Length: 429
Image (cartoon, rainbow, N blue to C red; front, side, top):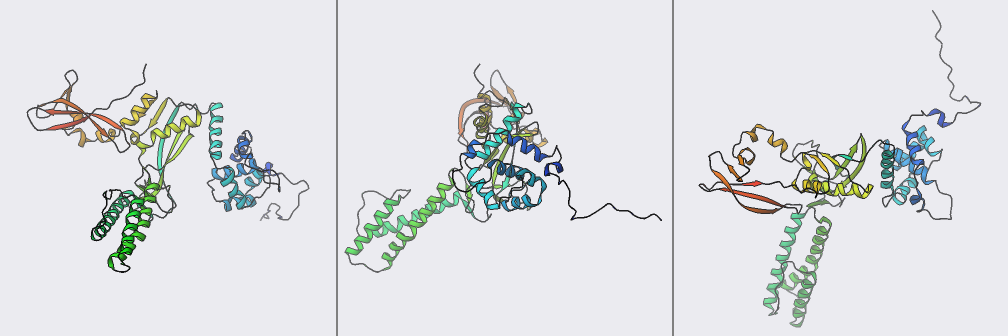
């Protein structure tokens, strides 16, 4: 029987000429691509954040390479990056065997890459792809997804609830002040307004307490009620005002992450439509490269398309000619914007998939299934009645867009059908 022979193995064997780290990394490895690309960029805006004097600091280009490559590897923790700089040969080569700790890495990210500097790196990469002919920036394939925030899902603040509780509190304060003023014969030239101003509230409370002091009322149920109203209601009203200021145009936010809005996630394990704090992330792609991105607090894709396309112009100083997106972006407001800015939309309208179903196609009373006479502008209902044009009606959407709808009505019956008339605003020739 032949003897089994193994290859030589000795962990402590020394090499006469130790190899360099670069020799151990493939020439086509992504770490080399990251290094080569970032070596071409001007990072003077990052270098300008450093002050002269003091001890030597780690080179900003090295730290930038480490952060970008770590993000490429789905590593976002500063401590994990520090660990990789000690253990991973790719990070060792990228950093030139420099080993900054996690505090240095986090400080670099928070102080040196803030103010849009990291976003500027993304823009430069896309511009490099454009100069190499890999992307044209003339078309955008747009889609979005909901990303859940790390905030506690039970720390929600709802705008409707805040407005309702604030109105109740104002009514309560109004009743307490009015009753006290009536009993003390305090005349007020003006009524308490619906939205009780804080100064007006304080002035009336102080006036009532001063009148009680004049009458020697230092105790009693009514005085305690006024004092309690003055102390507790003021802080509560301030709290409601802070909530409304944080909410702005949104309907909700999280106390532990005020930038997050409660929205329904695409992955709903409970399948009960539960809302969670999150963000609506939009991206554009071309030739499998991401060319633009945006993070929005609006859960509705229809409301994000216009500001998202505006961000593309701000980033590159130009706009794409063709816009491709699904029916979630289809609306009269968005079509008008796209045509007005000379863009060709390949965007389904929001009712496209519903109209493909037999339930819709077999309903003869829906406007799209009725016969329409273009020349005389009337519809014919299944009963044979003519629905003639009556007037135009304007409606305002939740996003503030004003649309015009045509109203048609039959003469011989009470049947009324309002038909949306989608009007495209095409660019002037």
